[in-house]
Image 1 (cartoon, rainbow, N blue to C red):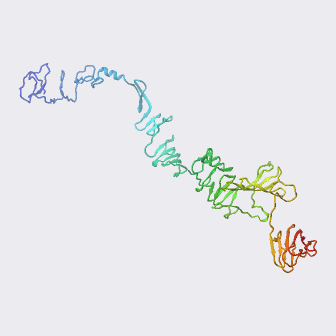
Image 2 (image 1 turned 180 degrees about the vertical axis):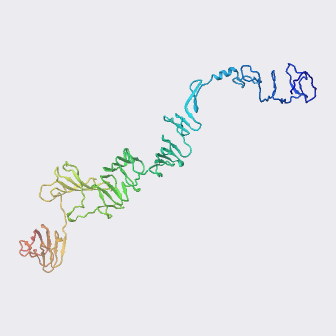
Image 3 (image 1 turned 180 degrees about the horizontal axis):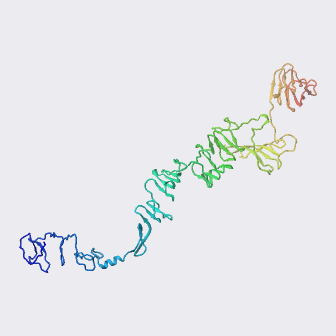
Amino acid sequence: MGTTLTGLTPATTYDALLKTTDNQPLTTTRKVITDGLGNDSALSLATTSASITGTLAVSSTLTASNLSGTNTGDETNATIKSKLGAATTSVDGYLTAANWTTFNAKVGGSGTTNYVPKLTGASTIANSQIFDNGTNVGIGTTSPASKLNVSGDNITVSAGYGIAFSGDQTRIMTPEDNVSGALIRYGSGGIMRFVNGSTEHMRISGTGNVGIGTASPSNKLSVVGSGYFTGAIITDSSLNVGTDATISGSSLLGSYGDNEYLLSLNKFTGSAYLNGNLSIDNQTTALTFNSTGLSFTGPLGMSNAIFGATNITGTGKLQIANIGASGTLNVGSTTTATKRLELTADNSGGAENNTLRFVNTDTTILANEVIGKIEFFSNDASTPGASVKAYISAGSTDATPKAYLDFATDRVTGTPIVRQRITDDGKVLIGSTTDNGSTNLVQVNGGLDYNIVVRNVNSNNFSLILTDKGKFLTQNSATSATITIPTNAAVAFPIGSQIFISQYGAGVLTINGDTGVTVRTRSTSRQPNGRFAEVKLTKIGTDEWFLTGDLAL
């Protein structure tokens, strides 16, 4: 269409031509161009340019590669108007000049490349502390070396929140920010490791066990190496020590009551006290051991028992060689005792190694103060019930070193009574604890009843033997018989020994001394005064005897 349509009238039905809707020539009145049949078909202008001096109205789509028009002074290009209206707060549309002025006044300011901006006022922006170089984010630094790099201060997490990690091989780094300087590492299996440089010092396993010096903690706390505690170690369960336990402070094991524990140790070089039961190898006695024994340098005090199989040794305090499995104790020997307590020692050469000693440490001893005591206790259910039934006690006579020894027994009262006392000067008081002032070595408060032993001699002649001392000898012979008193060198009767003799048979009995033995008597015959007469021999010297009684003159 290189020519201008003028006022010619085209054919009304020729579809190859264009025509206006009223089929009239083009005038100043806007026309609608259709094909020759009056159809609204698409219109393409196959030309490099088309110039329209007025307004071009398109009811459908206008496709053009370039549009130009007259500059009105407000825009650099031609104004193209459509049915799109101006935008409002609720309807989309084009921005008016007033709208652009309002928009430009909303936010203003400037910034630096890679900084995340922030509002510094109601309508101004500037740089924030966050630096994003497209790979890493830094806070307080323009050279972030990791995904998030914080420099210059701490990270504070409010109560109730935390830092969450996901995935394996998570690390909390040192300022050097390298693997060898990592402080805490969290890896596969839920293991958290605490390292210094490249050396691991502690870890928490996936099961919650803590290991110090070990990579395989088998308990809630496993320590390989020594541990030092300046305070108390308190446990309500068991404490297992593999080798040595060194305690420089105090240790309390097991809750037994208010301020009481099953085992309380104070530095171990001082004293160890058992307030209840300590079980080793699952025993229930006060102290149990089954291997190399118990060794200590201070006293061992306990309120229950010791049970074990081998040795207890102590520096000057307690030395026990063998404790039998049945509860017997042999002190001084590795041989199992047959009794509850056996003391074994070599006393050759006059030694006193097998001595049981009671030591009273009181330096201002008073009269009747107990120095040592052995009690015999019975749990008898009958009256008076469980009580001390007897005791042996050593006490002080007065403030001097003098001492006495008491022997007490009980029948029904529950309190033993002293039945016999050996005084500091060797007197034996029976039935009383008070010396009556006599010079007699034996004082009896009450009757004295004893039975003399009778020995029947049927032989005609015999010599006295040592076991005849204190006996009543009856000579039962039908013919004459002789009793000979031996010399002291042959039979050493103690001076003061007495022997009672009677002629029981019809044979005449004569009493003579052996060569070197002197017999003092009023009787020249040295014979009892007939059958059933009684005489007495009393030794008054080394080889000197008295013969008294019913003698024949």
